[in-house]
Image (tube, rainbow, N blue to C red):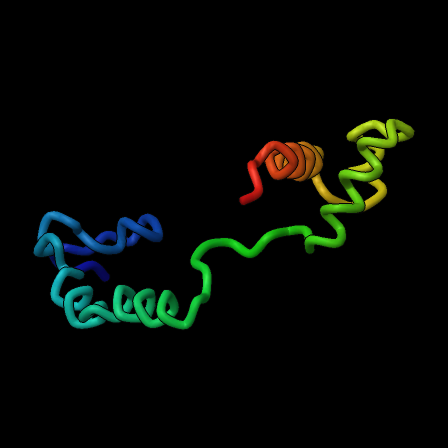
Length: 106
């Protein structure tokens, strides 16, 4: 049995989107957000917590990666397989170490 505004031939076609008021989610979004994220980020900044994704390698493991790379015994692929990280993570760690060596210390 069908009723006006509904179709039964698929998951998303169960609703006739022509009759939906757009944007139907806006009142909910305004109610949910109410400054929640920006307020939370401000509190985290005050506490000294960093935003973003946590680093894949600890500083000790990153130093180990750089030592293996600079020794020249292993290729980047071998280091990545050995430590179960991606090759790009190896390159990134080496690049950060080189940048730290060149940075002037005051």
